[in-house]
Image (cartoon, rainbow, N blue to C red):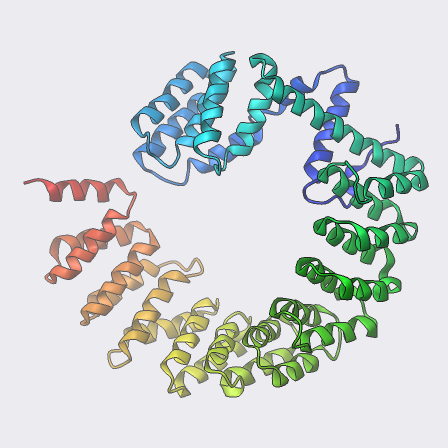
Amino acid sequence: MANVNQDTVGIGRAARPALALAGAIVVALFAGAQPGSFFMARAGGQEFRKFNQFVQTSNSPSMKLLREGRDLLDGEEWAKAAAKFNEFIETYPKDKDVDVALYWLAYALKQQGRFREASDRLTRLLAEFPRSNWAEEATAMLTELAPQTGNRRLIDESLSRDDEEIRIVALQSLFEANPERAMAYVADALKPGSTASRSFKEAALSLLGSHGERQAVPVLLDIARNQPDPELRQHAARMLADAGGESVVEDLIKLYDAERDPEVKASILRTFEDSAGPLARAKLLAVARSQSESAELRQTAVRVIAEREDAGALEDLMSIYAADTNREVREQIINALADVEDPRGFARLVELARGGAGDPELRQHAVRRLGDRKGEAAVDELFKIYEAEPDPEVRRAALHALGNHESPRARARLVEIARARTGDRELRQTAVRLLADNDHGEPGTAELLIGLYDSEPDAEVKSDILRALADTKTKAALRKLLDVARREPNVELRKDAVNLLGESDDPEATKFLEELLKP
């Protein structure tokens, strides 16, 4: 068999894990191991890293039990770990993380050779938590345990998957040994009525695109035209564009016109991004301008026009904006202007933000997108808009844009607006919230908010400052909330502080709340 280099194959997302697994199984089989021993060897590593990250997300008493179980697993104290996870399930039967405890209880039981009990816990996990983040791992462990528990159905399914994965590796090797025969095999496997599985078809398509080169174009074109499965047609169109380049643009346009599935049509439009020729440009413009196309497809065409390296793209976008009345399409054009690096795009965005957008909501959108542009020029424009604009909603949009910008000058302006005694109260409250929500890792945000709180006379603004403080999740903020809850003369503000302490996982907050409840 020829050497298999899976990293060089443009395998589809669904088929990629199958190929990786197949290669490992083939190596294990050639070494004399059985597939079951391969699964036993791989279990626990990646899953344990995932678990290790998960138990750092909270300091609650329930999470403390899971961390203790994690430590016992790390020390290979399987029986004690099983007891700890069982304690979690019995103590917190309604906790949102019971699925996590069930999975690692099953793992600890498996390590002790208690296969039937482990299988029972995994079955419960999948039945009670079908959308669990651990469902995939639970299914894999159930399959691993099938030979020990005598689950014939899972054994048969596992062997069937192994057979298919080995077939995928064999097809890749055939492409390396005899591409013509491999292409004929793929064409047959992808004909309407083929009984091949979806994962095999996706892998076959990717291999065809990676190995067939120009010879693959007729086969890919036939699949893109005639394959009943829209996802496979979509995949084939992408492979066709990669294999044929400019020579297949006309074929892709015909495919687009004949296609009825909107997702496949959008995928074909995206293939034109790498085409520098006039045919692709003309088709994109036609779709973007067409009133008979859906808004979603027109937006896709706009995105592709903006992403193409075409000197006339900005003029094309502005001409579409001027002639169009569809808000979603015009909003997408604003997004495109904000994302392009061309300084002319920035100039057009500023023009729309200053009032050239027409629709007030589109203007606000243009103002917000200015906040996504790097550089001080965007900050300067936002300052001008905020100062000159009478519409409070546009001014609020400018504040949000300043909050999103990483410039220290933008942050300083938010602080200035939050402190202003004569400014619009709602705009000041917006500035306060943005200081906490978009601190960009700046040190001292909590201290800044504490200073604002202490000097602020308006109770409504003070309430917003408390919420912003809580959002920083710092010790300084916690201490201030405790102080307000104990000493603030305004009863409503004390209530706000107590409510916010109830949202904290900090033991100091819990202790304070328990003290309040004492008679």
